[in-house]
Length: 330
Ligand code: 5GP
Image (cartoon, rainbow, N blue to C red; front, side, top):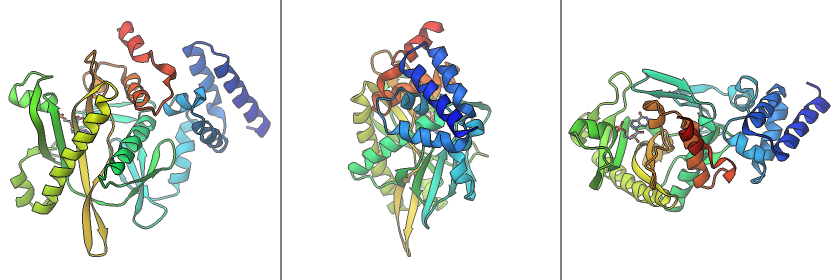
């Protein structure tokens, strides 16, 4: 596309946004700029991102605008080597030693990969939500791997050796705890419950006891103490954060890694914290605002994730009605 044609398309798009039109129309207009070459679109994304009131910023954050075949967001990292590809994220080598780039995909999986889908915009939302939470945790002294966000889907992180554990903190009975112990979902637990699973796709992340961790050397006693106290501090922080925006923090999953400095290392919080890894229920309606919408075929996943982002102040309050609209449609 020629430069002036690109500008014309962009101006037309912005014009339509500002002058209103219904949601369907706006979506179509957004789609019309997907032919803009990746390079120019990236510039547009950058400037829109800095403007909190720009309606385009909301659309961008929700992944309504994408470059052809996702080029605009991968072009910078594709020249770097891919070190690991997981179900929802890719890790690339970072620009400096000791750093990595964490790329958030739109892919969603559940039940150990048996259910799969692409949720358009999920990666963008999770990148922003996780950034917001990790920054908040830094301010309260929880050391973690986050350095800075690089783009809509990428963040720069410290390279750590991942400890093969999923650390689950629960405040309310739900999910596998409810199934395992026959507890009604929604029952408040008398105190936060911390569980450990062994990270293994082949084995389906089995629940394990502290003794398994020590016996098989997945972490030592000091690390385990650190992990437990950090998990409970994260729970305090997140419970308050979500309570302040009318969301009940039911449970969540954390991962930790070893950050080496010479021969020494410290155990720090790693991975992501997002509606993919937490159960979040609206305090008034009980509505699920997390990945259970996908696991349980409830639909409206992106509306729910956007709602979390909006309440956290990450998204402008443009599309507030969406989850209730989804409800009405069902
Ligand atoms: P449950 O054990 O009830 O399935 O999950 C407990 C909590 O940990 C939920 O918030 C769930 O989203 C999170 N969780 C458990 N396993 C995984 C996992 O493999 N990946 C992610 N992203 N979250 C998980």
